[in-house]
Amino acid sequence: MASSSVLTSQEEDFPRWYQDVVAKAELAEGGPVRGTMVIRPYGYSIWEQMQAEIDRRIKAAGVSNAYFPLFIPESYLRREAEHVEGFSPELAVVTHGGGKVLEEPVVVRPTSETIINASFAKWIQSYRDLPLLVNQWANVVRWELRPRLFLRTTEFLWQEGHTAHASEDDARAFALEVLESIYVRFMSEVLAIPVLAGRKTDRERFAGATTTWTTEGMMRDGKALQMGTSHELGQGFARAFGITYLDEGGLEQHVWQTSWGVSTRLMGALVMAHGDDAGLRLPPAIAPVQVVVLVVRSEDGAGDRAAALARELADAGMRVELDARTDTSFGRRVVGWELKGAPVRIEVGPRDLLKGEAQLVRRDLSTKEPVPLDQVAHSARQALDAAQSALYDEALARRQAATSEVTGVEPAIEAATSGFALLPAGLLRSGGETQLNEAGASVRCLVSADSTLPDPSTPPEDLTAVVARAY
Image 1 (tube, rainbow, N blue to C red):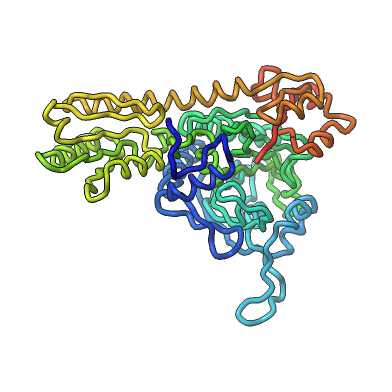
Image 2: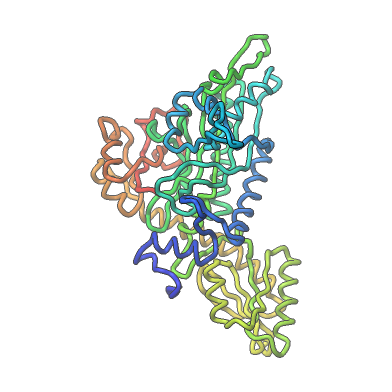
């Protein structure tokens, strides 16, 4: 794809290219308070597609949606020491309300472990109440010092799941089920982004968790992006909030818990994993407009025929938009749809109709081919399926080419300047992880020797560390 004049090229300045795409594809813009963002209608329509897909998978796992308050008593956070320590620098605290000083300050939700556990303590009495599986779709606030739209903002949108179980094994199994069956599959099957699933080091794990499991994707500039996490919380919150149940023998036990979430950071991943110098390249499974039918010129029946094709494509189950804005130049509209990443474009003009055909353009490859009018729906469906697979294969090949196996911390730092380094985790001892951090790299996760999700029982020093620079 030739570089579009409206965007900085990736090679010239990748961060600036990212900002250009987010702005000019009309995904989001900065809000009036530093670090906040306005998600524009087109960007939000992509997020809605993500929500629908993730929500369906969450519910299939037996989880029910609920909603919990935005405001959390400050005392709730202080009940779990590691949790409050981890979040203190990011908290937004309300001290006044209704023109008066509040008796107790309230924290604007940074995450909901504490307030949800206050409800769990009331809801759980017996082993029959377990497992308790809830999820909420909400906004959270974490005061961000270095904001970047979608990647790091003071307020962002997410889902957060919270569960309580009768045993540690059940909690761990569910945390891993979420990671693999929901997150990894969604990211690969829908977002077309291959991810490495692994375990965080103690330094990188979630504040208050006993173990954090993560999914890490490689962006087109070779940096890593944490795309979703699933945490084993052990019994720390259960003890802090008095969440107990009577087991089958009538003995009182504390529950074992998990929490897990993905956020609008996935929007940033979508841009950086697939976008090119002409803008977005959306995987068809997530694109709000899978096929745009573009009227080249409306005379000689081209407008009516394009409208009929759009209806035919919609009837065949595709998400379609008819672009008949012939008062805007054809070239300008093409550039606009390339920016927005519509996977397939059907161009219909008077000359095409004379030949009994339309032009089919695949955004991922920038290929154009004529197709008979009576084959447009079939050809479009084939093109969508092919584009979904091609984007995943391309991203996987890029990651594989930019991943190096190394045998020392210094080579890992060097390899992380342009991709991922696979380092024996035993080398992280004696200050190895600190050395990486001081050089601007970090351990994204610990994986097994074949880069797959490790067995929970494997000691960390026997695993492989994935080292990269990260967003």
